[in-house]
Image 1 (cartoon, helix red, strand yellow):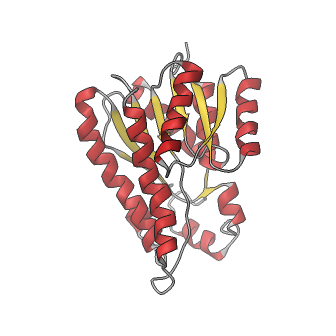
Image 2 (cartoon, one colour):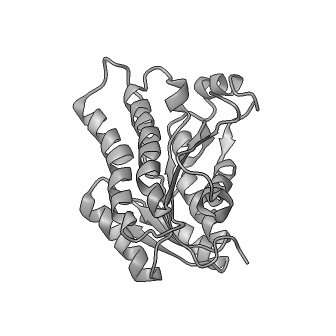
Length: 248
């Protein structure tokens, strides 16, 4: 039997990149998956099609996690479609670099609203349905450790996610709900390609500091989410798994 057989998962921001890879991996191990997206319906539909074509179960659900009503509707959709909720992957996030001179109120609120408030609102909506054995997985970033220049706001959001992970692990532990984070390094995705990071001097500089000597791939991250979602990690909570090829 697959290790996630009978489980139901929500993956936010799952129309592409790391979120899409996690959604496919959870489904491959037996979970029914709600594939959330903010704007790319076609991307989410493609992820759902890949899952269902492989014999899995998935539905696409639109929603902006930074809005309470949308966060609640995403969770409600999981209950309506599959009758329960066991796993929440808070993957929705935006990144944008800016020097201290360039930071604006709009830049700050755009990043904190999605990356931090979105994580809190979706978890808040999910907790009502997560029972003993439930798993919340927050996608953070190694930037919270390496604190690169021109990223004060983005790095701040990921530092907040690390702190929230620890706090919620303590708060939800008595309910036997585990809360952990995955902190990826540089990962090749549609986002890093469209931002012209892949193939850039920045990428080469990061790779030069990475002991394993390469950029990460989505398939380097997705199995970690399966691990944290499953009973294999039943004694882990409040952890941040740094998945960066040794960069820190």
